[in-house]
Length: 316
Image (tube, rainbow, N blue to C red; front, side, top):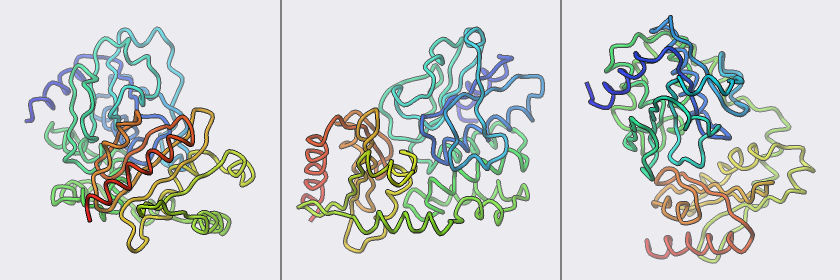
């Protein structure tokens, strides 16, 4: 067994209470890894108390058992906290994990900093859910439909339905192990990808306002007033609409800028180039070709676009 897996399993076995953390504004991999691990641990260690903290699961709330809960302060000092799908301390929802008796992290983003006592960070995996599935299989833990479904959801969403170049033969082998639990993928995909007419119209609105930088980066800029007028959540615009630019012919890098109370949320994507260092430069992080950060003002927006344009120019 992988040595770090052994250390993580040992800590899980030692503690009666395990609290699961993920990054704020969760995507499918964050929700799937948290819910999948909760169900996996409950079924394999029935005497333990497994709890989850986090903000709303948003559009992934259809997933059974995915709702976070309120955990009292006094629980943390005697608990094991496991951090999932999070590459930087600043992105972890609920800072009380630092009060825990012990900590573990399962993450697949490019390494930025050591966070946990047992720090399992492996960017060769397409998703945190893929990493957890590998951990479960190597550790001899028993999978079930209840644990396999959220793990499969995270693998599907973070691999772009197995389209992104992070998808490897191992990805498909691990996905097959989950499917062998008898998952109803038709129901899963119906919840994940079905759209109302209103949602299609909203995507069309954003597609019609795509702009291009001087160097060829496609981007959207979404003002606070526009978001309010459309009656959309900030996350639904920021993370939800970056994909409208993903299949544009001749576009290798695209960005979505969304005004929020905390700054300008920025989602960066590329089909060809490593752009994660740009996100890190502005205080963010993520994957090589899918990452993000929060900017202070429009001046930083233009500076970031210039940095992306430099990557495009260097690649020509």
